Image (cartoon, rainbow, N blue to C red; front, side, top):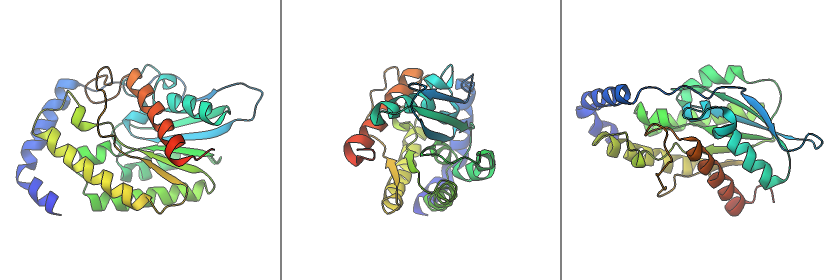
Length: 242
């Protein structure tokens, strides 16, 4: 609430600055090609992976989903567990946690998934969602995913590092980064007690060279590095498949 009160007097300026920045950057197209795929051999039984969320899930900045978040995460997941991975991606540019519930959850197939990767949060930051609203919407979304996939491991990943973005000017960069850190602390706290739900927290720093495609969304190299870092984190710190 205090953060919202502090932002209120300058919110018109932030809105204008954000619109100018968006106009300068433009909007990248989503990843082309198939929204499903398979890693590994054809003879072994594959695990099923659902990747759900916002523009990074939609693959903005990559030529296709094989080279975007879904394909790279599936690749490294398959290496970690020693099994083929059948992956499906359902992503949409601009969605918040609330719009993911409303727009994307109805698109989920009836089948169950062994793993779910939820890539969400960037638009809640950019649209100044309060931490209280973010928490409420995220808990509802996670409950819906759990009801659909009662035995799955659900991973939540942070939005890419706003503070490292070369496209965002000051002061909007610093203010959005502070809000992003509030969401990060919030989700660390409420996800801690949720069974088989693991959050990949915001790294303290990243090597931003070649990470971004447009100054905000990852490049293909950025997606690869992000996916590999997540699998290394889940493997080393959580041993979810050991």
